[in-house]
Image (cartoon, rainbow, N blue to C red; front, side, top):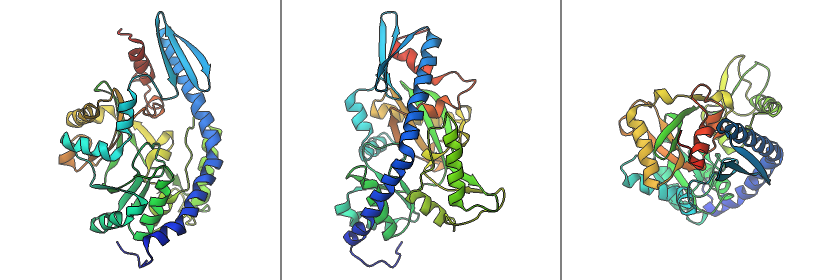
Length: 356
């Protein structure tokens, strides 16, 4: 796990801090306004359609807030924020090291991990050296949508860069062993599985002329022209290390028709990267996801799972639970749920106490 760097860890951090701040500022400037506007418009349409289905009235309160009225019943919404889980539960679920401890106590597998800070990066370096695989570095608390997450971390220098990038989102950090398998998101409401989505990593397809960087730019332009697109492909450290792990870089020119995974963090994938696989989730995994939500006391939550085989129990398949997301992004489910029934309608019925 060494890369020949002998400088003190704090020198590594100082060298990478300016880089991380510049990269994040550039990413926000390039994609923040457009994706936020698209996200607001998407959720406004989704909740309006759900209210219409129930015969309820939706009132725009301004600044992204809405109120839904059905007779003498009412609830308020803001994009994917709904009035189900209390602030203590939300804060607990946002604390990833604590979530790992509670899941472990409930007999559910989580990845080997270590919580640390920039001032204790030596502990993370020791953890990295002990692993037989690469690692994932992420913010430990109150982050989402893949923000600050870097995979394929294998060296001290990569760890320093990943730690600084994650620290932009908070001082507490988490390093985990990378687990092989596919990413699945299981959405639960009061312990009942509503839908499971298979989330594939973002990829581009070569044309024999364009570099991977140019292909990413073209993909983002295509997404920008689509009204329902809520994500962009962020050129961050995860891109660099994912490509490096495959012996590539942003300057590589893939062959015509060749599919190239550009990130391991799945949050930046497009609609075509998500599939409804609810019927393919085995009974054991369904029950394990429900146990995860019970361990945290969440009403509405998406359980993020990495496993090579969703038909088998996690322990048997070598899978793990990596996160339990409260206020989960319902757009992941709404856009792939045709024919199964609207997740938004189901959630809104619960919020309004509709039982039929």
